[in-house]
Image 1: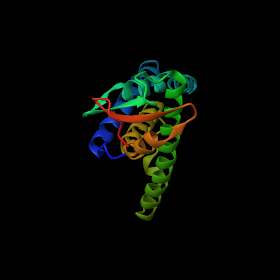
Image 2 (image 1 turned 180 degrees about the vertical axis):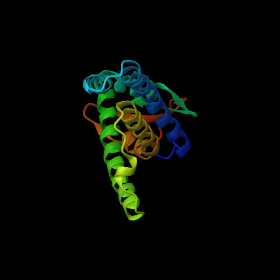
Image 3 (image 1 turned 120 degrees about the horizontal axis):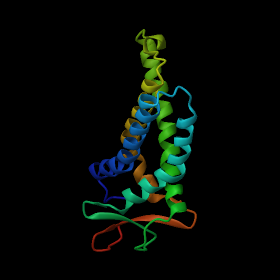
Image 4 (image 1 turned 30 degrees about the vertical axis):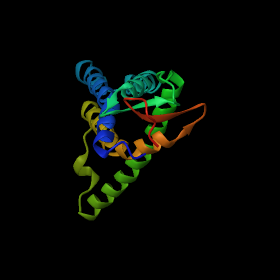
Length: 174
């Protein structure tokens, strides 16, 4: 995949990240800031809704966009991703981002421990700040790792389809 520069992959990562991050921050403020809920019921409901509905929509939206003179198409077809296809793409990016995030958190934790900082220094029991922190960590990890994962997403042969990178004139890039 030679056509998608790091800058364009970062732009695609931004398009894959900001809509969900914005909704996540807004709902955190509604659940924990306005309604002051301490329980995690609404967070869990939002997690399911964002996984099944919002994230696939964000993937379809991001992959419909043009990146420079390039765009992503489904297996040579001009059609947009279907729901199930966008769910597969989202799942691929989500689990790989999660693995990289967990590894990086372990490394950061080790560095902080070696520097003499203990986790008690970062403890906050407020559900609003905890949820905002988790949302921010999720958004940052997506922006950091998605540009690295996008080439693999474009090479992946999903069951029943694959993604291709084409120029605006329709020429397929290999």
